[in-house]
Image (cartoon, rainbow, N blue to C red; front, side, top):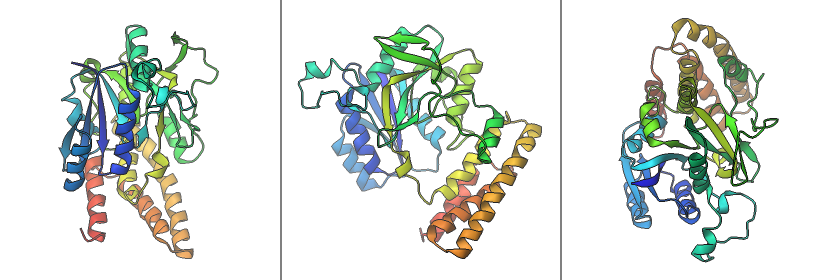
Length: 348
């Protein structure tokens, strides 16, 4: 039995995975843990090398088309820790749990390192201090340059999603602004949060199992928001620790796969925010379709005036989104269709 099972899904990106794993090993010094990496569509030679380079990691092969939920669930069902820490592969854990210089270096002796708990150490300590009924504790997310990416999440009703598509609403980066701390753990301030991001969060394994793991009806999004929403509806509390930090390099990992990813995200989001009710889905889908159609027209004009691979990808992304909103297909089927289209273009 471990304190924490760290779950990472990596889609053949050793450039992301290696720094992530190295940061876990370097910074997690107080709790026992296992690391389960779902190697998604991984190059066999690269996977063999990763196993050799990280013998302390358990790799789980996933060679069929699966989304974020399915891939994570493959590992979650094998987890042996009291807690599960979901972590994106394009993340790093800073030394001492914080971005700022702490004066503690990896080459310092072990006793010195143990004086400064890392991000995962802090989140476990938070959980063991917070009241019963706590479901999830999240770290603060930083961009690669150290600027704030996200600290907690406020309630996210359906109207905010629709307004966001029209660029009339933007989720605040720091939902703790103006709040009083809900708790303090060894001087660290914890605030209430009403939702999570799938990039990094800690949850008790038994509770995650009770909630049904990630909802596999979704593919890339919004399974994290759906999980946080479900936990709140069941009366559990969510928190964010402002001093426990994770560097999330998401801005550097986008690709032409957006043509397949974005349509599944929009379809899944509409399913979630409509609570799977057809009448509510239609009510939300019309303004979202109009917003995406406007973006599609703008992208078509850009491609006509300044043809480029980037503009073409953007145009095809919005085309695929508008075609997917009123389809009866599930997100996974939508992704599979456009993924195969991309592979065919690549001659694969």
